[in-house]
Image 1 (tube, rainbow, N blue to C red):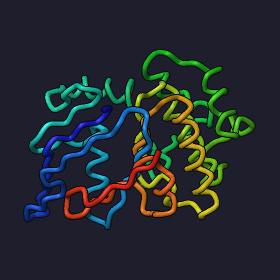
Image 2: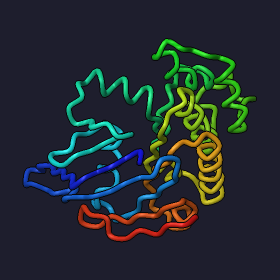
Image 3: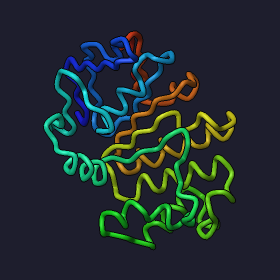
Image 4: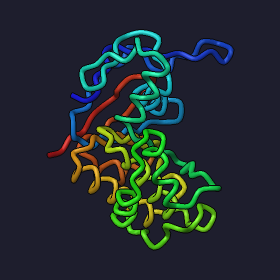
Length: 223
């Protein structure tokens, strides 16, 4: 299992105590694709952020690839994210001052392993190599998310985490992006964990989970 959550809980104070994750148990098989659905406030994005080491759990145990992550220092967490995890959000978060190619290379630049040829190969895989010299403001929403996918894969992560990555796209482009994500991660044996509000898109993953009141409500799996 790449992810193991054992009775994890997380609460926020707004100003009253709001329990977002409540004694949640959850496992994600290595190399699988998993979708998370749930109403607003169900805890799905919080769970994704905890798996991505962007937020801390309050109690329980969280393991990634068999390693407990709760005791990591900030530097260890940053390095773990850089080397092990890839992220794609609803808003692509491309840096406007950098070209498409520079945006894709950025994580490898931060790691000291900048590889222009690899970045170009990824842009070719996602179908926008011809836009490598463009800037984010010159791209459509679908093209920007393809750049975000290439950027997320540049450091060969074990896991790709996406939070409503198709939320700003029309149904046709959303389908194209999900199909691309599923194909690329399957080819690389990368675990894909996605938060989505779209039931049709969720059905295309190996496992479909629903969250309700901070707990897993049901699961549908397919071969």
